[in-house]
Image (cartoon, rainbow, N blue to C red; front, side, top):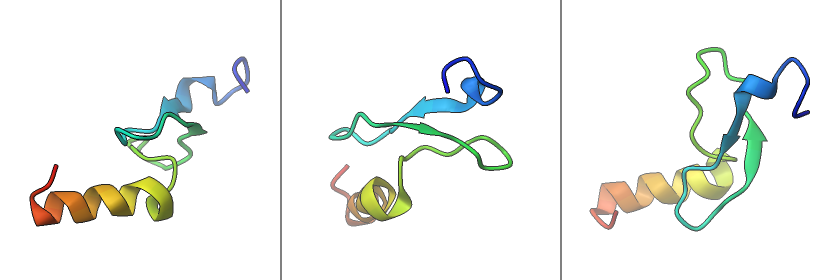
Length: 52
């Protein structure tokens, strides 16, 4: 994975309480979270409520 064709797409999750690595396979290459269900949704809810 580290030396393969997607090595430039390896990212660290942007959530403060998560450090998972993931491969960003999205077309534009701007994915921020390891999973929308896991970290992305929590981040969006916090931002909406003004807590982060």
